[in-house]
Image (tube, rainbow, N blue to C red; front, side, top):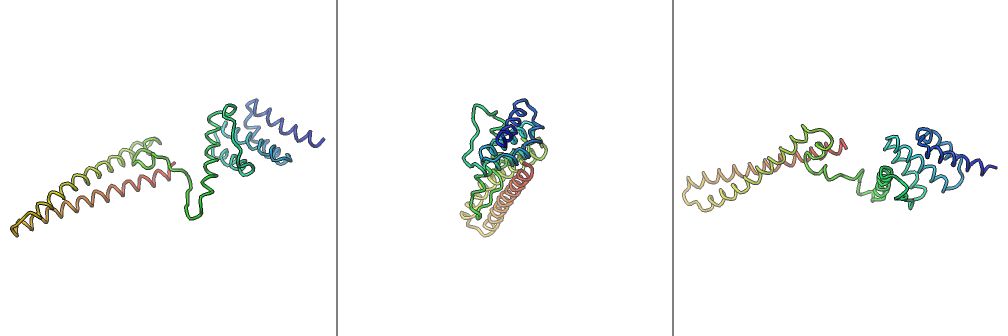
Length: 206
């Protein structure tokens, strides 16, 4: 009798999910999870719960539920043909988060860093923040151009300084080479600072 009741609870949860009653699945999953007695049933309840959360747009809670499911069954995978791409994408996030957790304590990885975060301004543009995105991209581009131009100018001025023979000309050419040297360093530092700010801003606004 007890087994029939337990089966009925899980079967009812399956029916609610199939009928698209995702809010009811979210509400009923915790008590059903407390009732089931096997690991397989618990894993299924968590899968239904997480899938219902994805369907209602609650991605982060769904990731957390999928991670609970993976804690029970680390080798669990979703059927590629029976599960929607949206749900599989959230499951992959949970799977990746669990893999990151296995990294040694000496290496701290909170989340995967998208490539756009590493490109100054790109992440901001993709997240609908064009003003800071264009400013950061433009500033880094200008710094890169400035550093490149001043680097070649410094090399040329320094070579002219080395080739100089008169003392007045020597001092003048040295000052010119030094000015280009300072300009190159300033452009490189400015570009690095803007890139660092863009990276921090991208990580703080995923």
